[in-house]
Image (cartoon, rainbow, N blue to C red):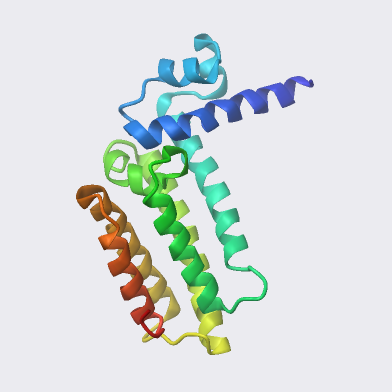
Amino acid sequence: MPRDAAHTDTRQEILDTAYGLVGAKGFSGVGLNEILTTAGVPKGSFYHYFGSKEAFGEALLADYFEAYLADLDATLAEPGLNQAERLMNYWRKWQATQGSIDYQRKCLAVKLAAEVSDLSEAMRLALKGGTAGIIERLSHAIAAGVAEGSLTVQGEPQTTAEDLYHVWLGASLMAKIVRTDAPFEAAIGTTRRLLGLAPH
């Protein structure tokens, strides 16, 4: 295997391993030794791939949002559906993922926003950029849905996209507290109302 490929694979292995650990324990709650031991990577090699734990956290978020946005793009382009259906599929995926006990699938934006935003400016900016990318895509999908007539909104699509993202972020945090799906069911109702869709 070429050296660059080995470097990339090892770096990615560290990131992939960290998702479940950070999803379960938070960023501060996971030590580098635990990540490297779980990944089967020699402890002395961490700084070969990342300059610091903060740089590692920034890379983890960048990697996470790259995959998240690719999945969101696919969801919002699913053939045979209108934009309203695609958007509701996205929210249902959100509920299924955040309601799951599988920490590998948990949203790192939800998990880390409150924890790291005050601790690391670099990680805060990574979160800001990633969530802005999500809202931008939702805004475009909402605008397309209005244009095709599958949904109606009051005000600008960008504002509606921001409002909906905030609703779902809050619902995810409340679901952690109450440990039921009630916050997500309420978010579904709010989402349908903001998109001008009939309640289910």
